[in-house]
Amino acid sequence: MHILLIEDDPELSKSLRQDLEAVGFAVDTAADGETAEYLGACEQYDIAVLDLGLPRMSGLEILKRWRAAKNPLPVIILTARDAWHEKVNGFEAGADDYLGKPFHVEELIARIRALLKRLHGQVQPTLEMFGVKLDEERQLAQVEGIGSVSLTAFEFRLLRCFMLHPGKVLSKAHLSEHVYHCDVDPDSNVIEVYMNRLRRKLGKDLISTRRGQGYIFGEFQ
Image (cartoon, rainbow, N blue to C red; front, side):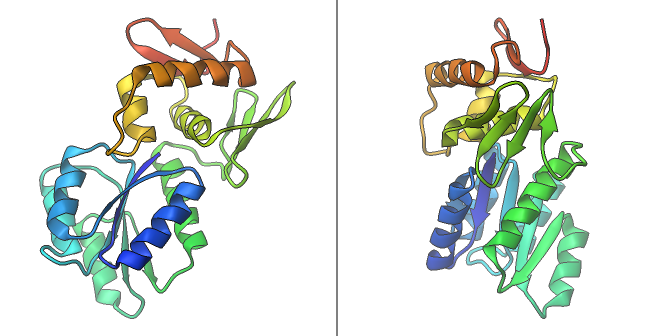
């Protein structure tokens, strides 16, 4: 999954990016409001983590502009713990969740995972379907009839994307947008290579190909 992290504190931004990437997210960062507003409007992200106190444009103004433009990008706002009015203003502007500063990164990760599942209609705390259970903490899969399967970081991101969209055709372009950083030039051949690796690990029938369209997780031939 692809996250836009908007934070003007360089040390905090660097630390959060490293922590989020370590648990399998692709992360882009923005340190000012104008850059953040542009990226959120032009790139495909799954969630934005938005600090309200930003140079050049406030986080609240960014959120208002996105929502005025009908941009549905899910947003978790970061705000000072005692600034209750900022939380209210954020929700009224269209935020999906908030987290008060200071916070533990584990809570941010938990909120991101919970919001992703809720947005994709997944009500169970663990992604589990078609005989596959995804262990997000250890970034591996438990596969019925096979056992524990280790995954590379890229394989993990791909599988999580599929499990959040079961039964839906996902194009190479969609997969690239949601598993790569925006500063990486995606190569469709790389997607094909990792698809073959996932099939070997999970079973060749679990992910089927729609020629000229993309891939489907959970449509058995």
